[in-house]
Length: 143
Length: 143
Length: 143
Length: 143
Image 1 (spheres, chains in turn red, brown, orange, yellow):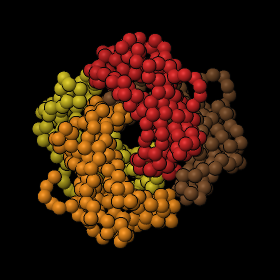
Image 2 (image 1 turned 180 degrees about the horizontal axis):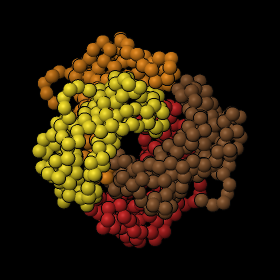
Image 3 (image 1 turned 90 degrees about the vertical axis):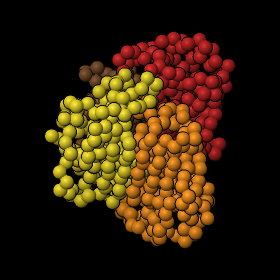
Image 4 (image 1 turned 45 degrees about the vertical axis):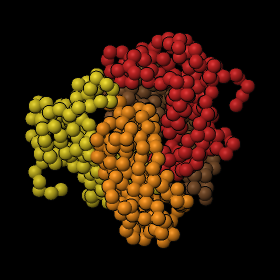
């Protein structure tokens, strides 16, 4: 029945670029972090068997809208919600909030995949029931 | 009159993750690289005055669809096209091609910004004419 | 009189590489994080005026010995000690410990620098007394 | 008989930090890139079987001295030399040169490792003869 997760993260020096702000690619790393923290909160690991593992989650699509820059040492609230759940995929939305104000909004669709024999080959698969049963779609009354 | 740019980039070891593929956040770094190379090809710099500079380009939105993984030492063709140009923003599309097959497709809308007196503060501004005049919107006959 | 600082950090997915372990360059990012956390613990900021700032810390030398790999979702203890303090520089040592066992050992010498008028130009300077007074060299009875 | 390799690399925007310069951790990524390019120049791959592979190179130690910052869009010459070769390890030195002037100097000792059954486990091994035969120690007449 879990459909959301909240955490915080501070912008580190190595996350910034010469414009003095969090580099835009790093919002996606923050989004992935909160997704993985959500999984851990359910007692799951995102990569249950790591290298030799049978399955995991590939990115199908990722998007972010940037509304206000984030700077070094600012701590951002990350609010993840499950926006959609299919038989083989999950769509997450992540709201970035600083001092109560939304500063960015992202989404990611992740696809459940089995790893092929060849390294780096992936094949979509049905989300295992014991995982799918733990994850629910968030109510749609806004964020 | 320039509206596209093509380059290549090899996936480096440090670009990969434990799934054995190019980490999804790094597609955005590749997209930024080709945007900057496009600017250099026009005799421009993306960050004309760098730290003390008056203006630059902030990301307004960025998106990527992942269709097939990219692996270590694979060299991907990057094809950037100008999809839209406003008075204050440009939208780029970047097609990732491996061995003639599209493996990912991204877009970024960048906003022309002046840097405020406070570090990390940004304010949108009209694209300088000498820059805007060099950039055109790509014809829409597919990619 | 502060000369050490301890914190923890979990290896994130984006920190790993295709060998399935924390990428060796990221140990330096972890080392920088703990240095900055040490500064915050003293009520200081490493980059007091950020972009427009007058001074900061440049890296003079950085080194790491890798004794055992670190893997995804492992949480490493980071133990920073001030190994030396000069008029213009500080040398830190960082011990990486997993489950009570040392897995890596790094050091960094950082140089107090004023930022020149040209972006990216730096000039060494004496550490401000109000900063130097807060930092002491750690006793040498091993780690 | 190969003992050196030279290449060039431009500092990308995403490689910089808020100090307006190449982040110090990224010098290690540049060093790894030139090591891998050296291997490719010998007809070898650094990770011959990637994920499922039997062997590769772990970092034993890495070090860098920073003499002058590198900035966005600067192209640095990277000069790799084989400083030492043991039965199980190689030590590389990498000189970073900008406009004919040395700006940084790094070294890395890499250890030939077999990958264990457990993900992320590594065990040192003798460098395969067909690889070791291609690599020689550079003459010591300075750099």
